[in-house]
Length: 160
Image (cartoon, rainbow, N blue to C red; front, side, top):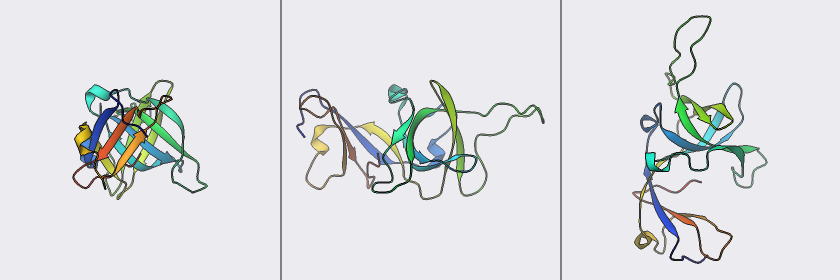
């Protein structure tokens, strides 16, 4: 893959479920589950990148597996008020997993983020971080040069 003058660079650093609140734009590879999809990984986007890849579409994780997965990129929203109790349901569940409702053009999806699911946050980066041994995710382009290179920092591995 060629790194050209138009190639963009971003870093990913470790994050936690505490970084995911109402209004946060996230991307998550996930698999269907009873009541909610189960996150395989989560990427927290900065406000400037909100809307990137928005939607819910087929994905290819887990690699080599025969499990159907999806990539869902959307904004975390508070669930709607229940007509039965006339109270607002919190978007965060108590216990080891966190459940979020994602809103994107064309729909919503409930996703549970289990303990141990990788969570990273995108930060600015430069080509200087692309060195031998660096963990990277390369978003290809139809042209010869890579469109985007995401580089792991501070022990984070791009999990896309």
